[in-house]
Amino acid sequence: MGKIKAAEKFVKYFIKPGKSLTVNKNMQPFEKFSCVGKFKTINQKGKHGEIISKEVLTESTLADLGDASVWIDAHLKSLLPGARNEVVDFFGSMGSVEKIMNRAKGALSVEAKLERGLKQAPGQTFKNIDEAIACIGDGIGSRVITKSLNKLSEKEIETMVSDMLIDGQKLTCKQKDLLMRAIYQKNIKPRDKEEAFRLFETFAQPLIEKRSQEVVDGLTLGILKERMLNEGLDIKKLKDKGFFDEKLLDRLLTDNGIKPIKVTEINNYRGRYGLPEFSNNQIRQLADALNYQRVDGKLLTIYSDPRGLGRYNYTLEETAKQAQESVKASGYRTAQINVVHQNGALGEIQFRGKYTNMIGEYEHIAYDLRRNKNTLGENFDEFKQAILKLSDDEYAKYNEYLESCYNYYNRLELGLPAIKPKLPTRFNKILSEENLKALHDADEALQKELNKNFSPHISYAA
Amino acid sequence: MVKYDITSINSKGVNKIVKGSNKMDLSQELDKIIAKLKARVEKEIPDTGYFRNFAENFEKGKKPDIYARDISLFIERDEARDGRAYLGVSVLHPEINIDAASYIMNGDRNKILEYMNNKDFKEELQKAVLELSESLKNVK
Image 1 (tube, chains in turn yellow, red):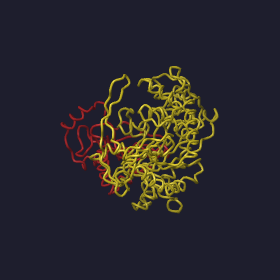
Image 2 (image 1 turned 120 degrees about the vertical axis):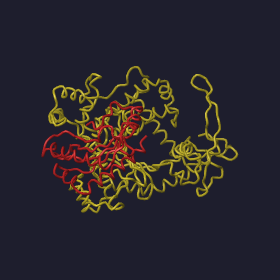
Image 3 (image 1 turned 180 degrees about the horizontal axis):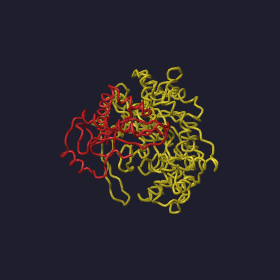
Image 4 (image 1 turned 90 degrees about the vertical axis):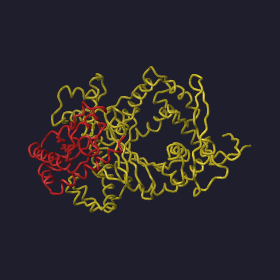
């Protein structure tokens, strides 16, 4: 890494190899932190050589935010062990859980959030460090990776299809044919695509629930326990409501090992033709446990694809923006909950299988590049050029390809037949999912190597 | 299950309906849909086996005097437990096609009727409607 010439009052603080923040030479203590957003106009060359004016934060503002980021980074790291223990205690003993990972947001991503937050803050000002922390939101991220199911045999699939009921009726021959085409990924006429997917989702529901049941039941009990402790929730009254299996509720009274969990938001992301991590029934179970309660004066929200939740007969496009946002163009697929950890840290816990976790690590790169968010090394340059060259229509088609990759990996997790998608020939080969993974893996290895002898430091001019 | 006739409504249409509609007494209108739904629960939920979801809405053209376009009391079959259903209430956003819904209880036909006949049910329902209506104010 080369040394950077320090400005008079500001210096570069290297957080990672080659990645730095601007901070004040004399960093301000967090107790005295405040930041008023100041902007300057810069001119940039556009795609066709035209000059585009842009408002950016001044170096002095960036340095103030840099100071806060370094402090918040340390603050979050201090909260990480408590939050980690809580998540491990909660999910670690579950037989369906394969792995748990946790990390605190780093200074670079804190700084990016502070920049966005400052632009939206009242008067574009943070009066103190608490206001800055509040705009970070989920500072601790955890992932709970659930185990895959065994591969289904053709006979098992056949039995599931012949036992399947839609509105209390066995499938018609046409429905059966359509469903088998969906299961085995054979050609489906465009006009039958929506119906085929709904049949496929109904077919796959028992598999989705089998994979997630332990996690969802655990969350349900944790949420109810939290409500018992903090809201005085009466289990007898809850039994009268009939929402839950009585045996599940009895565990609340007899099992002292159940830990409370405070959930403030649920997102159940998936692609338009992708299966969710939590089924609609499971989302309903969590909604029942939460009773749409108000949390700290804010309405608890559940964002899930409304097409299958039972209350709606609307198309996706007819529903509210928030609900539509749970469906991701690239097929991004995870269930995630926002929580308040017992030590007060705000966290996000994601639930997914090992294959979708793998593709989730690099699928977002294309999306980030299209939004000019580029924190990638030089080995991504060719990929970047290819992504930026795509027209919006081509990019939409590319997202369809990425979604089919997500669906492929999810099928593996559910034990369903799966055919690996091929990159359509119209695209540059560098855009293939295999290549994206290879670039990501190479970059990870490079960062690991660079990190070996690295420690964060301030760099002054030579 | 279609609980609302949303087919002919667009943003202009909503305004027309709001201006031209009769305001009504929330409590009285809730009484009406409770009575209608109870009759249907009695008739339409079997001991076991499949049944269709159903709902009762406010009278057409009457706008609730709260932040909502319509209110619906509904029965939704419990797919996991035979012969059982959810009783819920749903409040439709005044302008866009989204509802805020809450499940009130779950049970078989007799349990649902017993719950709806309880003297506290009306109060619980009214409270839920007001909360759901408030929650719609946060919807983008």
